[in-house]
Length: 272
Image (cartoon, rainbow, N blue to C red; front, side, top):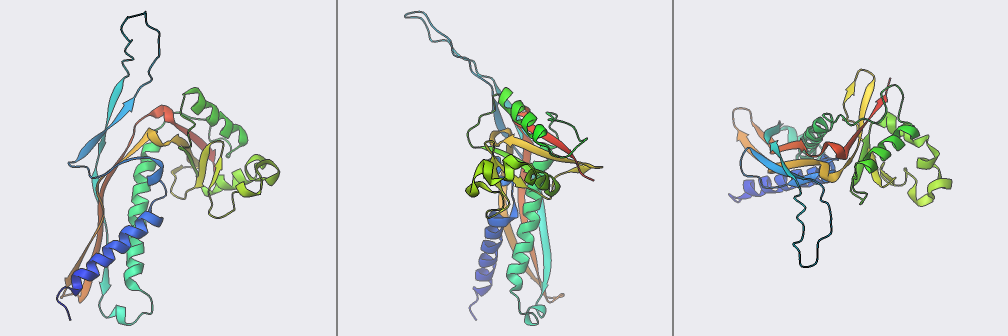
């Protein structure tokens, strides 16, 4: 057997983990600003203020907007997801153990990525409605108005994440789920459970924070949150002779931060 076969196995496994993480690991990473290949324990995202246009006199100087740039620091942390694979167990199963562990590691890291983003969303104090009722049409429109009043761009980069109970609430709103309002092509159960409505992509998520009987749901713009990546998903496989098993360790270094509070609206919903 080639002496390099083990390296080929490790590279293939790492490729599997990375692919699974990109495809199914995180639901929210692509909905926020991402900075890759960060060197050091932290990085900075810039929050850019609004500029104001004005006139000038003939031959006069062009007025300067003096747009405010506020740095927002994002601290990175290291995360690990490992498991043992017994050498002889692989001979007794008819499933691809490598792919099973790869998916499990990718899912674990993906959930951690989403957890980091959700923890920053939870710091938002920009509320639409209260937790006294479910996700109603009135609450959705209140959030819609808050985003518009804050001049949050309606450019296709707005996202809304809700719990599964709130997704059921949305399905009871005719403007969201009735073909008479939105047409057959826009029905929420066509394909995956995600739908574009009111200029945002609405997606159910099982990891949103629940305090007591109140579920925290969010409507936000992509530029309002940042995800810093120091090291993307990596895999290390080591053989332990005393255990007759491989230890498969998946790891990454990431951090999240809330950049612009006005770009996030919290919809707090009653959930028994």
